[in-house]
Image (cartoon, rainbow, N blue to C red; front, side, top):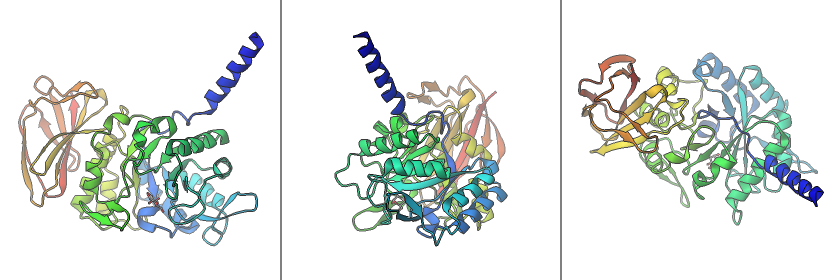
Amino acid sequence: MKKNLLLITLLLLGFITKAQKFDDLAQTPPMGWNSWNKFACNVSDEMLRDIADAMVSSGMKDAGYEYIVVDDCWHGERDSLGFIHENKEHFPSGIKATIDYIHSKGLKFGIYSCAGAETCAGKPGSRGHEFQDALTYAQWGVDYLKYDWCNTENINAIGAYTTMRDALYAAKRPVVFSLCEWGDNKPWEWGAEVGHLWRTTGDIYDCFDCEEDHGTWSSWGVMKILDMQDGLREFAGPGHWNDPDMMEVGNGGMTTNEDRAHFSMWCMLASPLIAGNDLTNMSEETLTILTNKEAIAVNQDSLGIQGFKFADKDSLETWFKPLSEGNWAVCFLNRSAEAKDIEFDWKTKVYDEFAKRDLDAAETSYEILDIWTNQKMGKTKKVLKTEVPSHDVVMLKLSKK
Ligand code: GLA
């Protein structure tokens, strides 16, 4: 009897320890680069090596960008035993050689697959090959997996993503698991147990506030995506993040002001910062946006609390994000076509119900830093008066002194 109990306990323990994601990864939002937004299906060994070189030489690596993620279309065919191989034409030395090169630069490598039998671009997906694929990724040295949701009719989302989670865990190489399920099955409600980040929306589109209609589906401008984050902040935190999609900064569809607003809001949202532009050919403005130290520090703050919209009037939004050491980030976002004057009395009551934090600037004096001009702007004693250009932000850090 006792023996049986012991056996059952051991079996249960075995099951419990097996069924989990890798803990301790993505304690701050993952930072990196992904091929899809700029290169779509044109992925190759040469391109990825060039991107890795540029990530280092541009200063992006020093700014904190770490993962180089190849999206759809790296695939060749499955062999007779069902193992997946890279496209031999685009990866003539094998994808492992590409990954080794990326690792030699001190960077990490991410790969893409799909829960369906085919990926969104019609390449072999992982359905029915989850454990095999996870082993292959581990052998290759993969550090991050983006797992898509095309061709999944009649598949249960929690089940499919959990199977891949368990496959990755069984393969024993720590992998950040990025669920790309577009928010269809409310992944924020179950994703923390399964992965480290989950897409909250359909695909991003390189425009400020448009909807791009593809017939059966739409992709979304950055303001549209921003609005879809409403109500999700409480689900995010260290190791489990809302993902409003990879960035379009530097891809040419938006002005510099709009790119800056996009980047700032992704920082306020504690969003993964996955660049999606051609790092080998960036303007000074793009690089300045992507590597702003203070904005990145807001995103990477160790508390991992997603910011919230405090006020919204006449297309001017005020966002707050509690930071560690009692500090705060504040972002005024102007969505209108004209510049807007702002006046903000720091004595305004700002209480974050979720974080249980009170700004309390009536009692506490904060030093103000303008994150984009890098100017000190005095203290929170005086009413803030400034102008926010159209489709742009004024982003501030308030430091407790
Ligand atoms: C889906 C995803 C995108 C990208 C493409 C690739 O649309 O949401 O991010 O991965 O598939 O085909």
